Image 1: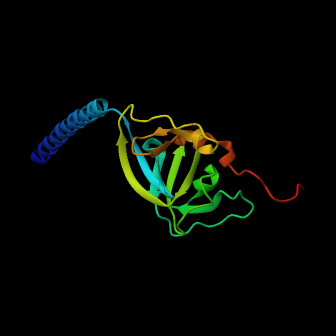
Image 2: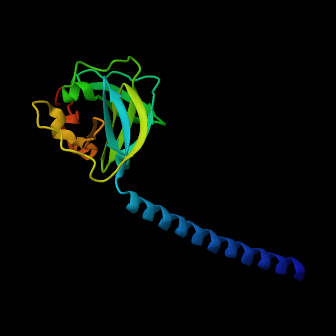
Image 3: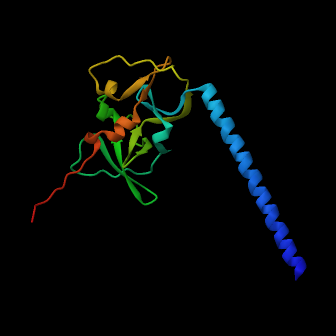
Length: 188
């Protein structure tokens, strides 16, 4: 009986030693990562295509990207609302950014990809023609987008040298014109 107790205590001390080592290694790794981020500077963005143009959104507000099987239309919504999408039992509104920003009539493909945005209490998906991936933009590389008559300049953080337009996702999440909060029916 005594040997099994000693074995247990030895195993517990070994586990504690391993936990401490793992914490130390994790701390070192996180310090190395933050140091390399500071050296490299810049931020990561999810890039996607809307027609011929490439756009990006900061990864800090992107919850997920996917190609959904079905987007269900919702009647009595503005034309830039494509409908809703169910992801793991949660309904997400899907916005057609082409129509919302006035870029063109709509998406090129019938089965678009979606970028799920989430921040604070607001969350929704934007439909895109193609999801391109994640890239880092070095600090200071973004140039101001010329002010035009389109809505795109309202939501732009800037444009890269290779003509990728970086959008302000936080501005989209805070824009109340994207929220449909109307009830159809009679007051009783």
